[in-house]
Structures are given as structure tokens and as C-alpha cells.
Image 1: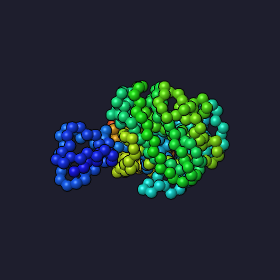
Image 2 (image 1 turned 135 degrees about the horizontal axis):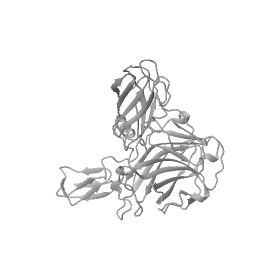
Image 3 (image 1 turned 120 degrees about the vertical axis):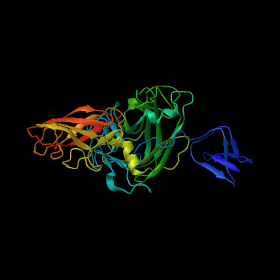
Image 4 (image 1 turned 60 degrees about the horizontal axis):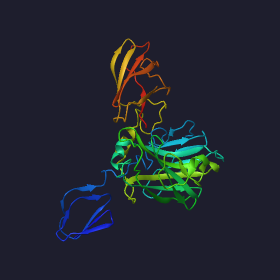
Length: 388
């Protein structure tokens, strides 16, 4: 009987027995008949979930519900878990399924970035789409130690520009950085890319609920921030020399989906998930009372998880149960469901009392309102933001 681990190493065991410890980072293939008896430990990868990227297929877009945005403050979160970071505002628009092209087979969504002008980079400019990953989700990589695990990044990408493009891995402090690259060969064509990154054996890498690593796609970096890629450094350079600048060409596009980061030296097929599971993963960082497809600030009287717990003479305390336990204590924004305005809620007396969050945590919030009405039907929307 032959046992193939990770698709490469073959172990032939006439007695149908595997002894010792064997690590399976990908698929375990058993050929022959009979059973496999294991003495020792079989480790099925470093986690039951291969992909450490959340919303890599760009399906969840709680903030914008598919609408285009032109970020003016950095960073700006776009589709869930993906932030656009930049040195110059209003140079790029970002949208789920921008341009309405057909995604790669098996996918329905992508995130698209479009250059709004032909901008010449200064030496300190930078433009990047990235995802910060929580330390709990990467602790098993052992980065910062001699046993640091190698990882592979894979994705589908399409651009109106061709040539060398950059990517970037760095720690939260910016003191460890890996500038990598890949090549887009044909314009306006989906291409599948894989890049393998050796684990960093030095530096400080978060293993709790803060940012451990940022995985980024560089879209234009100035000369003082670029240099030789393909190796870890002490924070500089940030990007490879010669990387294509999306902002340098007016109307240039960059579309990406199917982003997967996994342990090992080779890529496996994208790990599809149940939609509700993927939504809950995103809601750990950003949760709202609005329907999933409703943009916060919309006048919408559909309110979830809200209930008065105390009302007297216009004074009201209302509790909201947050849908998923948040990463950390959130920043909470309140919205009027009738007007969409921030900072007020609505009561049955057609008033808009000022609403104030006075208790909040990772599982719930409590809102205090006072108005001239004794109504017991005060209600409103909330957004709880706990992004990294």
C-alpha cells in the first residue's frame, strides 16, 4: 500500500502501517486496499481552515453593497476585510465587480480598482490594497522563530496593464517586510498566480487579537520605498523596484479575487465556504443592524436585534445584541432609521432623540435616548466597528 502525503512524498507500507509523526498540509491520498493504521500523530495541516484570508472571494460587502467609492482617508475599508491604503486621496475608485466583467470560473465576485487620473508618483507615494490578519489566525506559523512556516499566496488577477506587479508582507510595527512580485502577461485577461514566501525567522509577530501580518498588493510605490525583493528585510524597502503603477495611467484597472494564503510551498484550490460562515467571519470585525445589502446611513426602518429595556417619560435605554462576538471593544456609530442621520434614533412620537452609547462590549451595546415623548418605541440602527 502506498501513502502519498502532500501530493509528493510516497510512503510504501506493506503492513499498511504508518509509524511516527507525519504532517499532512494538503491532501492525503491512499492507494491500494485495506486500511491505514497510524501509530503516533497525524497532523492535518496547521489548521482545519487552510485559507487564512477572510473574504478572499470578495463576496461580502457590508459597507457599500456593491457601490463604487473613491477613498479620501487612509486606510479605507472596501469590501469586507480589505483596506485600501494610500498617500494621495481620490486617485483610485474601488468597487465590488467594477466594470462588470465575467469573473473566473467558479467565482461570482471580485474587487476592482480603477485609476482616476494619470498621476506621477513622488518618491514617498504609496498605493496598496491589503488585508490585516489577526494574530490568532496565524499563531501556528511560528514566525519570528527558527521553525517559521513557509506560506503560499494564490489569487486570480486581471489588469488593463501588463508587466511586473508588486505584493507585500509586513508585521504590524512595520519592522519586518517582504516585497514580492508576480507578472501579468496579457491585458484584460484573468490570470492565476501563486507566490511562495519563506517564513520570517526574526521580528515580532502578534499571536493574539491584534494585527499579525498585512498581506498587500502594491499599486504604485515611490522610489524611496522600493528596492530588491524576494527576501525579508528590517522594514525597507517596502515594494519591489519596477512594479507597475496603476495610478500612472488614467482609466487603468486592477481586478482581483480568489485570494488564498495557506501553509506550505504549493497552492491548493480555493477553499470555498458556506456564505453564512464567511459573513460571520467578517462580522467579527464589522457588524451592523442593517440588512446585509443595505448601506449604513440609508433611511431604513428594518431594524434587527434591538429592544427597549427601560422607558420612562421620554427617557429610554435600548439594548442591542451584536450578531457575532467582535474582535475587541468596537467603535459604535448610531443612525436614525427614518432620516439616516448619525447620532439620533427615532421614536413613535415622530421625534429624533439624541442617541448615546453608554455601555458596549464585544457582544452587545446599550443606547440612552431622551426626548419629549413618553413613547416606548425608540429604535435605530448601529454599526460596531472592530477592524484591525
